Length: 134
Image (cartoon, rainbow, N blue to C red; front, side, top):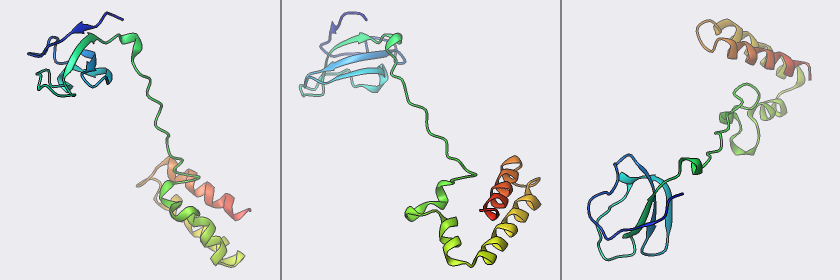
């Protein structure tokens, strides 16, 4: 990484899309931000940039992958309140009623798979059929 360059304010010393590290008057250091993110003028306050350097592309922060929701086995919209909707339904119905519920939902997903959901609808139908076997 390059050495810090002292900064006393003025126009952006790099391209606006250049990634830079900056040191602020208050001691904070910010890394790998676009130069256009900052105000390069000095206002005689703690937010003034006092030094900068071009960011090292090898130091790019790694961003953890965003977890993908399992829309078949545990859709997030069915888990509100700390219990999965299917478990509340199972508890509220007799075993025969629950079996009918699962059968009807499997039929629904199979019925509409070509027009809504495609393969995911088939996986949901299989899920409901599997619930019938529990």
